[in-house]
Image (tube, rainbow, N blue to C red; front, top):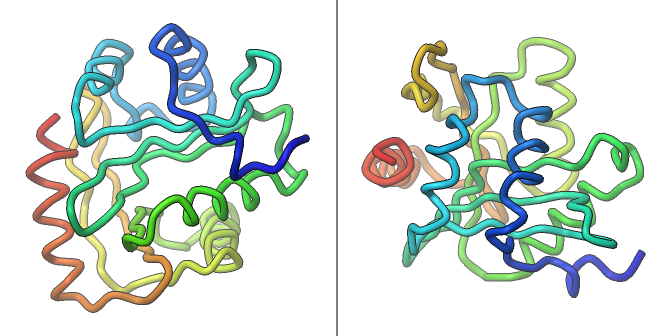
Length: 176
């Protein structure tokens, strides 16, 4: 496989069904919007999806929200067929190298084995687990709210800054 940095590309709208199928298999329903709601985000100027593709197949993707100060990774997934090969780390490092703005993402509090493994994955890739937690507003009607904790890259961010980030998320990500 070629170097990931050169392979991360913007999603083509005609690939959205393939992307959504990958989202649907990678995330619980409470963590993604319904098909139409997710598709509508593609028209927002502060929302981008970057994919790693090979032979027309999406191997991994990042869905981000951006503003003048931060990048927020709302979704990151590796196609199940390509997991446990280091692809997640390589693409995450490529994504981090795309811009110098701090990167913020949400994880579930590390309380069970899967959640702990997820946090450790991000920590191995330079992210810092904060103590800033909250309940994610409902983004997919009919599904439960989720307790979440923020992680940041490349440096830890203080709770005042994370409060500012959360205000931005409430005004953009969770209003969409």
